[in-house]
Length: 297
Length: 286
Image 1 (cartoon, rainbow over the protein chains, first blue to last red):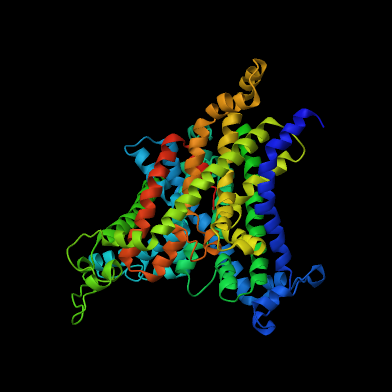
Image 2: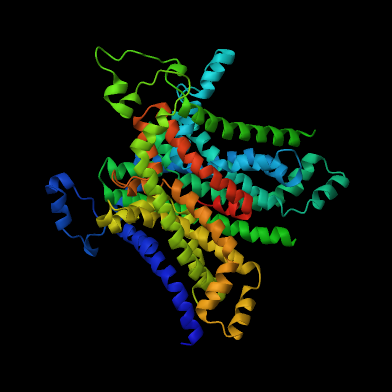
């Protein structure tokens, strides 16, 4: 081994050791634990007994992993997580593509202020966003109180505790993520193409449909890559708001604390991690590839 | 005005309203008294004065005088003060450790080409899309014996903050021909340490400041992973906020949230002011 290569190993060593100990090994271990049979702590006569009984490779079973997909409740949890993440991604793009376009193309007073305001949700963890949702659209939240006072009907009372309220809270924390990702993509546009289309007689709609939208597509894919992953992994908001349904991260928490079924929690965590990281990776790759194509052509 | 401009302006107004109002309501709630909310009860029972007999804890339940009060903040500092300190401690430890890992790792990543470099780069980015709860379950499953110590919480925070520090370092090193400088210094006889001290670190100053601010914000607000990793004796501020939301009054919860905002929002504004690109990178984090 040459000296140079040896130096490289020294630089990477701390980083590699860290990733191995904190990410790779624990995640692998979790996949293993998810494949262990569930231990009945009460029947075994206390936690000490369970700990004394060591399980090995021979005990491995796919039961937990199969249950994640076959159990009707768990399946509904996964479907809610997926559905919510897709819907939130779509809606936050619809909400944020206009403001992102404003930030790129228009000069207006207070632009800096506007950008500062829309990045604020980034600083708040899910749990805080849940609280803000309660004080805004909870049972006696600000919006129901205000509309009660203005028009005599409490609009959106207790909305926070429903699935659509949860979706609104998710969209709230996607605002900076969607806007900033879209903005940086729109910044790379060749706007001459749009004016060329218009001067060739295309209506605004035709120019949008046949010129802007194909240009926008990779930007949308990159944005969904971010918003989907963040929505899938979000746990704090659901912990505070969701009472009658469950999303996957919340169900994992319930398995650990309410059911004391750590093996089940591990199996679900593996499914959640694979789904989220996998979809994010594929979309990111797809977006990057078409980015290169869109800016090259 | 085209329909498109109308939509863009309307969407922007909706965003400004949706972001600003809850923060203002929360700030208002943190200062307001029970009586100004219209739910006053001056009764304390015969010979029993809550304010006198239970100190700040009892007074927290019945503050009826005046319109504005600092009592909720006092209550939060008394009850949750230690969680604020722990969160700050974790955030500063994260900054120190990610600088160490990020400077060496980032330098190596840009400087050397070796088999598996792309894999390593992808692995560094994985935490950005990895759900926090999965990491928490994994860390508990593997390092369950140190649960109850803040070290396991620190491990979770490190995993989520490291990508930002490394990205800040590698982006800077890739943006111009840094290694020419270093080679010149080496040619003039600078030792490894001299090159680190006088060439690498000064050139990375901006990146390390931005990286530290990002790491601070993310570590301080981290909840998804830390909620399962914390225990009642190693409670971080966001985990304590959950306790506050489920147990305390609206005013106390608002005060606790406002304290968090007052620390994090200036840092966020600083990031926004110093670097725009990093702001967007931060958005990639769950």
